[in-house]
Amino acid sequence: METKTIKAFGTEAVNVPLHEMDIKRRELLPHDVELKILFCGICHSDLHQIKNDFGGTMWPIVPGHEIVGQVTRIGGHVKNFKVGELAAIGCIVDSCGKCEYCEDDKEQFCDEGVTFSFNSPDKHLGGATLGGFSEKYVCNERYVLHVPENLDLASTAPLVCAGITVYSPLIHWQAGPDKIVGILGIGGLGHLAIKMAKAMGAFVVVYTTSPSKVEDAKRLGADEAVLSTDAEQMKKYARKIHFIIDTVSAKHDVNPYLNLLRHDGSVVMVGLPPEPLEIKAFNVVHGRRSFSGSNIGGIAETQEMLVFCAEHNITADIELINIQQINEAFKRLEKGDVHYRFVIDMASLV
Ligand code: NAP
Ligand code: ZN
Image (cartoon, rainbow, N blue to C red; front, side, top):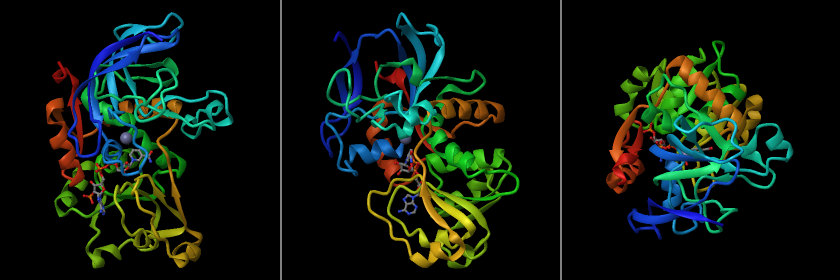
């Protein structure tokens, strides 16, 4: 298969800082779109993978799956995109397209396994897919998103992973004016969950381990912010919350949060702590509560989320960096020291 060489930032091993490297992109297939990448967000999943937290990292790795850019070329059969328009690519770049989940627009649950934009087996070139910390991305138009024109482009990038990951469970568990929604952790996912739940009309209670984020949570739209290390504050919403979106990236005790739920409520895990979590049986038996999870969202739902954000003027609060600052940015992300998403200005990759 014909390929094109482009510049990227990646690494060959844990503990080797990310650095510039040459990688290959496939030449366009008939249904492919090529994006010149303008901005790419940095998600905690990128950090998990470069640390090999889940044990499955394929080397070399080029992270990045919150991609926005401009269409530079299209294959002969592309119908939905034109050269010059703005577009986005999130976590999913391929799936079987014919199983019951793909047919139902839930590609994230594809029977044959979805291809992620980085660190997934590449069906075309072999090896691993290489992500958005790079000049260009090529993928089938089915997985490419239209970007609303009224939103700031750099702050829109985080919507296509962080945004959809919290939007999907907020819709599934029916956030709305009659609901008290808890959000656990104010990072990339958490701060967008606050904005979206509020725009859906819910009463939003946020739980943070960071005293400095308590005040800021209200600016982001939370009705109440609770310092989760304060046992007294933790009692206030006991048995009152309809569901909680848990965005925490590291091992933590979920039992106190199960006890905040009303009957039939759920703690919905979207964070990916690498270690198993313990649940006390009584905390789910009592009140018929559940512990559940949610995985990004399908392509149609991601497009719907972008329209919702355009209507409500929701984007991420970002710190814009150059690609040369990437290793420093990962160190700060590890410490929870980001307000609230790093986005790379890819013009710095020259
Ligand atoms: P992030 O920006 O680092 O935010 C995570 C937040 O969790 C931190 O800001 C911190 O908030 C809190 N936290 C971190 N360590 C903690 C600890 N030990 N105990 C309690 N709270 C802690 O990360 P992100 O990019 O939002 O991603 C969050 C998680 O979601 C990651 O594990 C990521 O891999 C996962 N993820 C999953 C999906 C999916 O489809 N399910 C998609 C994208 C990302 P406070 O300072 O407020 O306490
Ligand atoms: Zn992500």
